[in-house]
Length: 425
Ligand SMILES: O=C(O)C1=C[C@@H](OP(=O)(O)O)[C@@H](O)[C@H](O)C1
Ligand SMILES: C=C(OP(=O)(O)O)C(=O)O
Image (cartoon, rainbow, N blue to C red):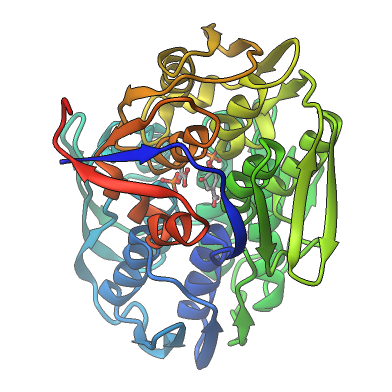
């Protein structure tokens, strides 16, 4: 089965889902604190379920309510032999590996989809150095680890994934030794490190950040329980903000304009392209008369690149997005997939090793595209349908459950016209 989206302008209000990145972090910090924390505004996407399940596997008590969690970390680490299912969540995997090794443990990490193909070498290098035994299969996530990690000196490249840094920053404060992490190549996705440091501070952990070149972590610290409300997700808001830039009338509810989320940059980027961003009683709205081409440095905001590329595809002039080689190691090769989708829908884009060039057109046509089993590709394709002259057909549309399970409901509420269809229709 596939989904047929008949072109239709979107209009109305949408409640932006809670930030996936902040929810992962709040759950982890609460689970590492001795005592009870309440985390409100939770939506059970597959990735968030993975992190909840992972912490439960380590022994944390987590009580799931409709839209909030009660977490008590008093029993965390009481289990020292466990299986951790990360589903397809890179964040869960890269955060949990060092956390699960804070105490002597016998671990089996499993997962789905492309997760086993995404890089983990940074941790294998640490295992080698620290004598931690591990065994894995190539290309699928099936990793056995036995041992305990110690604090000390770490040298980690900054341009593979910031998630390795976040993982270590969560775990090292609980180890006996003091630690220092040296960043050996320019730090990308810095905004996500900021989210980690901010959350750690809320839960009582102190870390020194020397301009993303070195982090100093005192050992023997303690997480304090804390109640936390998860704010709306700018990476998801980006889809509806771009929809606005493409002449849809969408009001976004609950955005925190003072947020530290790096993907908030979507507002600046669309403004540079000629859009106006305004707040009304019914929410925040992006409007645009004439969309101009832009140059984007994608190194700090990888998740909004597919949807920003769509905005570029419908702007006047040639846009260029560089420093995006890391898009190739996400849920799919997002660099290649984004270029392919734009071209298949009737736009014009060219793929380079670390960049893409997009030649703006006035309208897209439509057609059959793959979701590449990637939530951000499927959501970008849905927004693209609003500026197509013919239907867009997407396969495997349920992949949005990874981050935004109610996406298709929200899309329909806004007037999106979707029907199930047989492939080839
Ligand atoms: O820490 C996080 O919450 C994330 C970090 C980013 O990964 P990279 O640091 O690998 O770019 C981002 O792409 C991912 O969706 C979420
Ligand atoms: C890349 C993503 O998440 P993760 O790395 O956690 O799988 C994403 O949500 O786009």
